[in-house]
Image 1 (cartoon, rainbow, N blue to C red):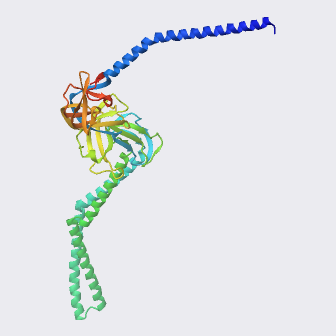
Image 2 (tube, rainbow, N blue to C red):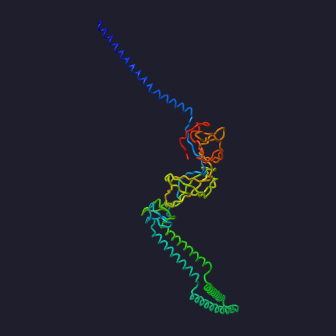
Image 3 (spheres, rainbow, N blue to C red):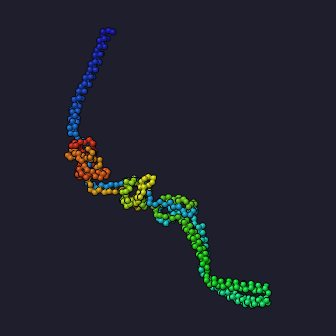
Length: 436
């Protein structure tokens, strides 16, 4: 390598060193400028921090102690059910002739819902009516007794039998004398005695006939005739009832919720054809524990809220409280009745019932969460002139979300409800929010 070449290399290395020195110098200048610029801000932050630490100010939320009317309530949940839901089953089988309703129709008690064919049953009713008329005619004839011409005929027969008896008696008496004298043979005497016996029997028969026609029917004959009428009447009533049952009517007033009937189909005596629901009053069925059941009784008012209608509150009334617990759940069933005149409440909706069991009028109260325990006793922090004072209190009824304060707090005082875990007595605070 020549001297010229070496000299060139040395000069190039010197240029590189100067370049790096310039870059490093520039960066140092930027660093110094940055420090000078940030130093005032850092100093201000230190001053603010120092000032905050000196003041020990804690941000809190307070509530105003107020005089309120408090209520102790019981809350229950359950599904709504209709007052009545009737699955209407035909009482007689038959072919469906007419269906008069469809789902959603409003019906009144007694309205015809379905008509079954009734021709055969009507004929059976007529047949039973004819049998009843015949039985009644037989009874009337028995009660009326013999006709006048029958009485005359019986008296004539008696008169004839009496004449025959008298004539035969004379013949019998003469024959007896002749037989005793030996004039009449034994065979002839036997013939006379036989004729005499016949005459006596005929007279008795004629006398009995007259007696019967004059006395009327016997008691047993009348009893039999009356029994026949009763039997025929029962058969007729049954046929009439069966014929009426071809008209399937609504047993209650309400809305048709289901129709399972088609014209021409056979209706059996075991399958519902129509379902009618009476939801003019709905019921909330629920169960309560033994601690709550003693506080309930029929007649207590209840406020009902429904998930499906969150903006609607309806009034109900406790209808029943079971006297004994359910064996399977150990709970006591209760029923709450809810009027539903406008039909807005539907069976199956889920509802919540609130029942007030105690009232507390005009008591000083604060939010329950304001209470803290200090040395085993309830205390609160009261804010006065941005300084908190730890104050012991005497609490009364605890009715969430409020607690009654018997002593220690006056209405209008500001009580810390959020942030008290970071406080100490006489600490300075800054109120971020005031709750009513």
